[in-house]
Length: 410
Figure 1 (cartoon, rainbow, N blue to C red):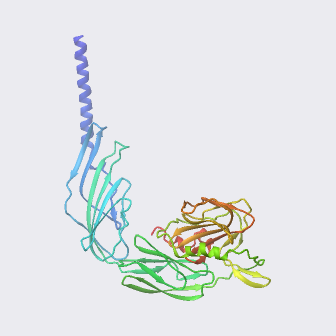
Figure 2: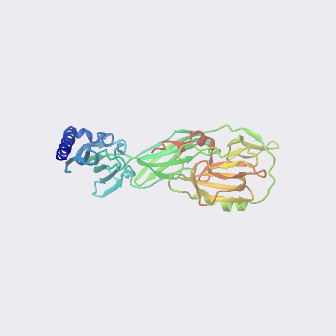
Figure 3: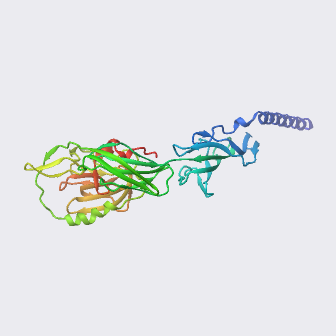
């Protein structure tokens, strides 16, 4: 019995020696190359850590190795940015981050990883950015846990610039106007083409100019103001040749005043942000019977022009949302039947007319492809896309060739 106990003790000692030796070997072989290597970048320049603290597992959760260096006041110099707003890029290993930007006047701005590129520059001069990037992977215990700190200084010298998505546009299109640089106010655009809403972007503002079907062809000189900035820009509008179609004379069913009271006030209001993303979608699976801008003829005489797409939709077809947004009208109107209006933000709205029944609710948030209602036989299904009160060709937004899709990542 005594020999057995002695043998067991020797085995235990040998196992301990082996494990200890393995742990010591692994500990000695664990170096700083076990720490995250992908750098944090700002303005495409790799930031240099000026402080860190990391715990690297060596043998499960029993043995670990610590690397640390206290943060210091060393400031990495990044130079001057004169053409674009620098963006912070966090590598994949970062699970969370803290960002602080100090402006030339001493004011500070803080944000987390999700909002790290939403800072608005309102003055030129010298800035400082402090970033702390963390890796905390609770579900992967074998990975290093800790943080790197960075501190960098840079100078902003951005001159305000105004750019159109195109200098020439055909009737029925949308032209984006982009304003970037150091700005000291909110923009407005004076133009006879229609009301323009602006949305905030990482580099400035983006607005959308409607060029409706009957916009006057030729050069349109527009005046953009933003605080102390005043800039004249010219957009050349070309005439679109629309087809003539024969239609029957409308039998008046009344309801014009009801329509005006319900729909026209929507032209002047809108969500401030951009709610759409990417191409718009056809609201109907049916073919288009009447194209946007088609000249309607009754007994050889011009009676009007199509302000939207008319679909040859059979009764009972489900009508879907062309894009994400907020339903600002849902109901039945004498003139247009079941009607749904979706606000996509920035003054952009989809108007769906002619449904037999409406399933959408006013105030509801919808995603692209959500059901709005069902077609019937009494009215034609019509889809209008408007910016303010001005209609534009929905087909361009559906194809993805509209100014509404211009530099969407901005």
